[in-house]
Amino acid sequence: MSSLLREEMQRVLFRPAKHRLVEFIEIEEPSPGRHFLCTTQKSGSKKSQTKRSSIQECYKRIEIWSLHDLTLVDGRDPDVDDPCFLLHFDEVRTVTAITCSAKYTMVRALVALCERHCQRPLNLQNFDFPYIKPTTYYSNRGDCVVLSQICFYACNLVCLSMCPVPLDA
Image 1 (cartoon, rainbow, N blue to C red):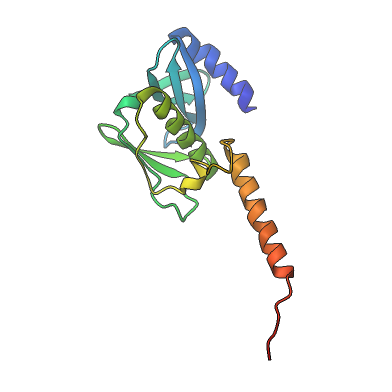
Image 2: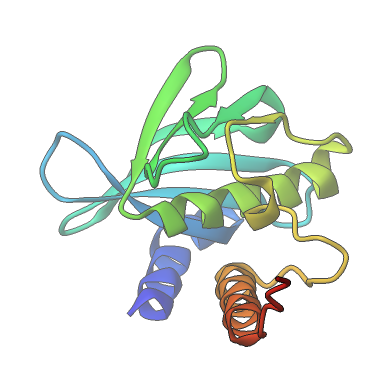
């Protein structure tokens, strides 16, 4: 479903503007319909943008922000599964993703674009950083890394719980 939606948005909304859709997530908005936060890159350029789009019967750009103007991404609380995050441009924009996983997917895309095209690290605050920038042991494969890390930790816990503990008298 998402690959079909990606192709449709690329064809209808971004290709005519000579942009390439890098990543998108569905977000919650007060107005009716489906809404998406998209990151795009101008074809043949190093300029990247973040767009908030709405889709009902057609695609429409609501707001466009430049990645160069993004000063901070605030995850609000790394210890809570909160799909809401704050994008600090000239104003602070509150974004509520459909899931916490979608929030981290967008942040990973923004980090990669910022490193590649802005030649500076993106300022992040209040995120669980192992899910954004994997350690050297893990490769950057998004949510699969999160799942494999959880499985690895669970396996270690099972192995430790099965080890006999010597009781000294």
